[in-house]
Image (spheres, rainbow, N blue to C red):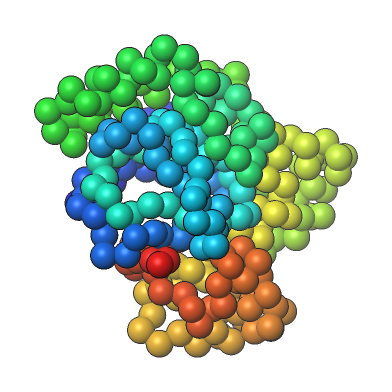
Length: 271
């Protein structure tokens, strides 16, 4: 069972959703997680460690602590779905993680960090509270309260980053980066550095992932996928451009894309 909810203000401006999952092992042993361009936090409660794989060819994987913050990136990874899962987590909005995790998103880019390395003993206490909770709702309440207590207004994204993010999201990643930089009133170097620090990706790379997510969302909801139409709608030059980007970001050809569920377009069964 997967439960999602949006936190109350002011966290709703920084967090896309809090989630709770409890499920038995899946029929497929592994699941490919495609890039979303956001920072994520996951706290596993069914064990002390988790295993992640770099890609489908990685046989042994890497052992990680149960509490993990994963930065924005453009690479997919593979998770183990062969065991029972009980976990809570956070999907941060672009630019929202720094004010809650305690470090610029740029320092998390393309990597994962143990939450205990960021929060110390506070992370261990939170996991103990989550394990002791009586219900999924109570776990999400306790997670939200912990995040609210850590909110640092000094680390919120500045006006230039917020303005650029609004334009990128409104255009599905199609806004011209040069125009966004000009509108910010900053030099190109300062604009890119500020955006990267807040979001974890440069504006160009973030726009690239936004276009990809737009395609995934549409493809996940369609019984028959017309890739040429999706390429045009998402702003790719042509279908060949879409195919190249799809392979680069997912390791799959578009024709191989079969999402785990329409509501989870970035998760693809992988055996």
